[in-house]
Every structure is written in C-alpha cells, then in structure tokens.
Length: 334
Image (cartoon, rainbow, N blue to C red):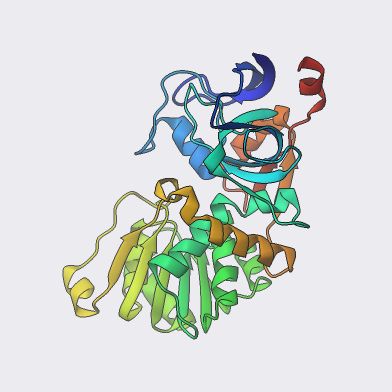
C-alpha cells in the first residue's frame, strides 16, 4: 500500500478534512493516475450530505467523481499519457480528491493534444450536463429559442454557450444573482431574467415571455416555481429537460398545459449515463474550449484548501473550483 494525501468525508453530513489514506496496490483492470486536476461539483456536496437519491456512504470515503491525470501504472494505457477519468466513489473506492487515484481501465479517455488539463477537467461533468440534455434529450435544432434556468452556475454558463454554438436562434438565461447574470451577456446570451423573491408565477412568466418569446427548449437546473413559470411560455412541442432542483424538489405541471402544447418532459443525470456514451461529447467540449469557443471561469485550489472551497461551492460561487494536488509528497512515499 501507498500513503496518499487526500480529502476525507467521515460520514453523512460531514465536511471534508485533509488527511491521508492507504491506497491499495493496483489490481488487474485498473489504472493508477497521478491527479493533475479534479473538479469540485455540486454532486460531490450532495452525495456527502447523505441526501442524494442514488448514493449514500455511511463510512469514511474520499470524494471526487472526475479528474484529469497522468498514467503512472496500467496494463492497457501508455505510461505518461494524460487522460480524463470518471470515478465511481465509495468507501472502498477512493475518489479524485487525492494525489493518486485508481480508476477502471474502461473509465478513462486520452486527452487530445494541446488541451489544457485544468480547463479540460472544468468542462467534464458540467459540460456533459449542458451538452447531452440539449443535444440528445431535447434534440435542439438550429434557430430554436433556448431558456436556461439556473444560467449562472457552472452547468448553466456552459449551457448558454453550447446552445449558441449549436445554432440556437435566441438564448435567454434565468437566475438570481444580478451581477452574475450581467456576465452572461458577455457569453452571448440575448437576454437575462433576474429571479425575485415572492414573485408570482404569472408575473415571472410575463417577464420571461418578454425576454424570450415562445420557448422551444428549456434546460432546467432549478425546478420549483421558476420551472412552473417557464412552462407557461413554452411553444407547442417544446422540450423540457431537468438537470437539478436548487429552487425546490417539487413543481406543479398542469395536465392541460402538458397535453395541450404536447410538451416533452425528461430528466437527465450524468451519473447514470455510461461513460462510453459521454466520450464524443467530451471531445466536442474539449475542442470547443481549445478553440476559445467556450469560456469557463476557473478557481484552482490545493488539496489542503478543499475544505474552504467546499464551503464556497455550497454558496454558489458562479465559478468552477478545480483541485490541483501537489505530487511531491507522494513521490517521496512511493
């Protein structure tokens, strides 16, 4: 075993602490990576809270569901190759918030030459949650109007840019933070709508309608009352894809509206999409980032700084935190 510095969650509801774990020897079917960049995702906080619908860890574990790293040991991947990896974290399978990590051979893909590792990591899970719902779930067509609910988060910021690059005719972003909304205008959105406390559904719908007109595609990252308002401005045959519920776990969907406009409503969770089905989208995202066609605001932190970044992420920072572990301690211990 090798002693590896890592962030550790001791149980449901606990905050991460900086410590070390014993990483077992690499087994057949696994690749050992030195972690270069590991994004902090809202999913990491949700799983750690113990309230996520698909995973709950009672014992201590290392979080981190994705990373970019360099191959150290492998039977199938070239040593020294820079790769993107997806991890299936549990108390027996440490995650990416560590200097070294073991990944299944099938759960990684080589990074294209010239792609910055930190920015490649930044558009991993967040980019997938923006791209696949628009392309595969909603079938976005050129010239259509796209409404993004929760547009100032990491997924929302990428979604408005992806929609524009895919040929959307009009893109409108909806969120609470006025300053962050103003920043969306620099990313190419046509209009923004600020959410107000205690505003009626009808009033919000009217303000959205004035900014967007009839909406063909809704990418919804917040659910609740904002989604209820967005439904009122949908065009016939509109497609709504939900990717999160920051505004509430329930929403009223009138049956007459659903049937009368023949709406299509679906949910997307990248956690349940096989890795092989994500690779083409990842390559598209990396190429767009390298070409300067996607902008992502990144804040890098050391592994020992993750506890403070964790708190900042809980407050919706409108940026992507990327953990960049130091490798010097590990090289001394191996």
